Image (cartoon, rainbow, N blue to C red):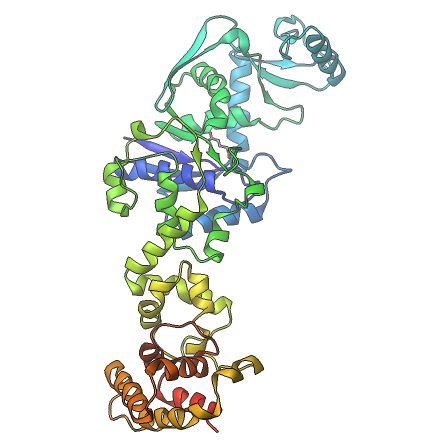
Length: 457
Ligand code: GLU
């Protein structure tokens, strides 16, 4: 049974790279009918915050990446880590190291001066008697041989044990360290596939050694390629890369972001647009690219527009209402959101834009001085006729509204193109909106008449 885990450290937002890792772990579990686990790696007490934990949970929920087990918090598992450390000490798989900071610093400097890689020299590993004062606990890394694993993305990777020193697994204050807790958890949680960013590749041989010392069989590893910004450097805040929830704020649909994320480092032929079912069906770890992926905001926008246009409007409405609420627009008083989405879908790339451009369906329109030019005296007879014909329509339909506009233009000897822009400004306060008949239809008769009354003199 496949068991994957997403194991973020809550030291910031759930960023693009993290969300992609979570998605791949989730997809692989769903594809194989396995189990997806969420584990919060919060042992770095100084850098972990509750706010970040919440941002991760919110991001996962918004993206609909549901987990079958967890969230597990490493800070709740200190007793377990402590027990394993005691057991390793008792079995001689780890040892207490009494070396002072000063000694380690001097050692480091001497190694650097000789152009050697800084590493612990194993003094306490060979110490016969117990030392004095505070100590940390180090893992007895094998001193010879190699650690080899078949990375599912990178292929076979080999590391010489002589390159790895004796890793600290418990600090002097007794708290366990990162590489150690990951191993205990991956073992306890029976993880079969570790899918994570390739910034962890150098941790993997160390983790495999500890895992074996604990009698475990290493899981399979898949290290994901980095994501680059447009300048070819690792994607970071400098590129405007932000937390997943910021994408919500900016008006992206979760499925657009997921579709975008999946393609950052994975492909299935030339296909760009995938339903979730297709993803679950097609996703294979072997198809993850080795080469880094470049972040392309244009493509994300393009996908977003695609999903806005093609998704069920009732589904889009659930997300749009969130934006409307944020803008303080009360959508209970006006047209159904699904109709607004149908009218606006063609012309908006984001839901925030759609929300901002849909205020006039619900709120009064305030016409500024600059709009006066749209209402010259010679248009008044036409505008008042439009108003009267709309007021008298037996049926409030798009066709009837259209007919009222066309017949007014005819009666007044004007082109529709002369009247419609003025009506549009009166209705919306601006010059951009869906087709005028649809706009009028959705605003509703009472408001339409009220707005025309304001400009007719
Ligand atoms: N907590 C690590 C991170 O956020 C991930 C560890 C792992 O996946 O093994 O980078």
